[in-house]
Length: 312
Ligand SMILES: NC(=O)c1ccc[n+]([C@@H]2O[C@H](COP(=O)([O-])OP(=O)(O)OC[C@H]3O[C@@H](n4cnc5c(N)ncnc54)[C@H](OP(=O)(O)O)[C@@H]3O)[C@@H](O)[C@H]2O)c1
Image (tube, rainbow, N blue to C red; front, top):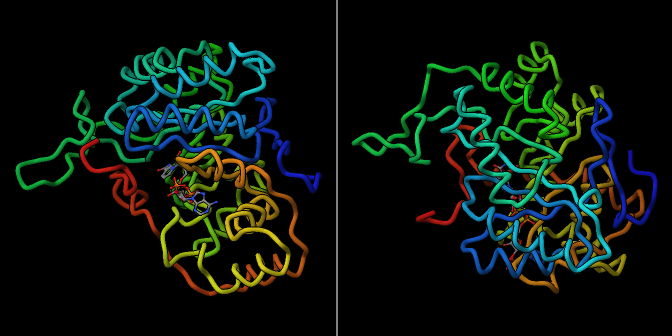
């Protein structure tokens, strides 16, 4: 639980003594490598120490380059940064998990990961084509492997010291319950879309009860307008407390007990998003009373990511 009212250095403990996750995470889903490099540099300079990556984003090399430069510049050690990447759907077969992990690690220029997530619970046809489709344009799924099979292979990465913690992304409560019961190493983190239009309260309650970190992606509603950034309640609170709408949304996320992943191409916004602090209690309650409901990313229903730029 976060105790400080200054969230910039807030850290949330992971289960099984797997370290601590900085509550403020920076996402690295960008359209191209050059943007990834400059944005990751900007985020490090702003103070972010938690970076969320994925083999599917096809830019782990550029994230790795920016992190390596940041570490080489001094003032920061590997233990000071928290790096996550994700296993893609085409690598769910157990024999593909460790090679996929090793390839990500090599691209990121790291020798261990803080967190490895299954990107979605959906297994796609194994192979090098990340978006396998049939002649009608439908995704080709793989029914020869279960999520538990994949999870067992991820558990052995922890056993061998290759990553500190493992978790799941884009999963609903029902599916999480099944896996949670069967897992030898319980998921330390669940990464899902969450903002005031999609609070996922039931899932959050389960996570709090079990000590699983709830990691919210799209806390700014993916920057979509209209969306949470332009919600009249958020705008009114921002004006009242002297913060920007983005700072209000991010503070709300941390104060309700979640970690978050925000992102920006620009260094100025990375600084704005890192410099957040606690909102008064009545502001939190007003945000909790917002009734608009909207899911922005359908990935949780199909395994096909909704925010990946076309052509990647
Ligand atoms: N597990 C999954 O399936 C999954 C799915 C989606 C995302 N993610 C992860 O979550 C990360 C964040 O997701 P997200 O992009 O949806 O996050 P977000 O922070 O909700 O939205 C980012 C968008 O908001 C804009 N923005 C950033 N700061 C702003 C500010 N202060 N004021 C106004 N607009 C601002 C950005 O535009 P500019 O860049 O132009 O500033 C960008 O378009 C991703 O990078 C990825 O790592 C995971």
